[in-house]
Length: 185
Image (cartoon, rainbow, N blue to C red; front, side, top):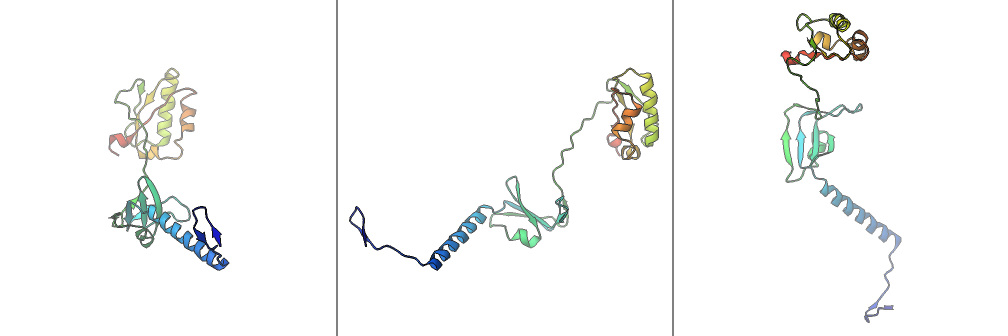
């Protein structure tokens, strides 16, 4: 028996190893429960087609969100099980969800400083675009801004690359081609 400075007598407690193990496991379970309770999503999106970009699982059915963080993605059942009583549930009814896209580009005004070339409509081929640019580049001083509108055929042609534009528009020649999405394509 041990006596403390306040006069209280105490019997030393001896626990068996198995009793210590049980208490430790219970403590871990309690800790995991508390940690999980703190990660209840504010919002879940279910019954959708969520693009993850992950090669192993490019699309999932549902997503759990807390604040500005994605907590989890998975099946409707997996994500629904993470929801709490205050979690907002949005049924996507099969709609697609993709990550936010920052489409950072500039639309110059109708008459930018420089030279505007005419490609003969909004459906020129890549070869025609490169030919017109090459002709214009031969006549203009280095550094002149060349602008013009092209459509999807040339815009999405794999041959219309920055390197191809550099080849036909001299070194240091600025070349700007305005995409036809401004024209309604």
